[in-house]
Image (cartoon, rainbow, N blue to C red):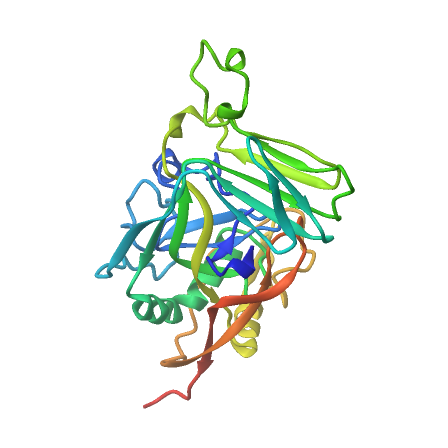
Length: 327
């Protein structure tokens, strides 16, 4: 799906049910800061375009959190109802219900029964500069305060997203055998007696699976608090943020880990094994750094463990480079 150049595709478009209802009602939004999990979901940390006391933001925020305002946003209907998006080597061979085959060992399908809307910012330079100023503080917050143990290059700032009210995703891990196919079934494809007498839920659509396929459909009808909301993010856009190696090394070596016995020591890595019981606090940033310059390079990433491909991202990577202190 990355080859479609619509943004970063999420294998799990639905909001995390453990997040506040204020966040789940809208889902991923411009200004979200977080990471992509190995399962293909967006791990939301906080939103810079919402005030610190907004119900969607956590009670503990980065030390240098600033409410970001003054940017332009555009919204447009990107896809109409009954849209399907196919990766290379996937072919639609029939309709009512939609029927697919794959000619390769990898393939993906995204169905949008209700279409999708694109929300994007026109002020990307403002977001880029803001992210560059706060990148180190955000990594400290993510790994020290929130305990994510995330590697360098895993932090994202969302500047746009494609969202829908319903979706279905399927992946292939082998070519389709002769006579083997994958079907996407909607309420309209079912005999009348199978839907008469009740209102079909948004999960009425489903996959009739073939061998070598994995399918998901959503949102879940059990999450009644957000039924009908356009909060299912199929693609996100934004900046992937990477600290230069010397900045990253300085960050991880400054983490103070306090064991249960009260003895404090500095761990050389955020990711190595440590004491079973410990607590940590968000350290302040290095006051000796007075200015920063930034370079931008193309980045690479992968869709998810399900698809398992490594392809270029059509986005920017923010790499802070330290400058000497100016007296």
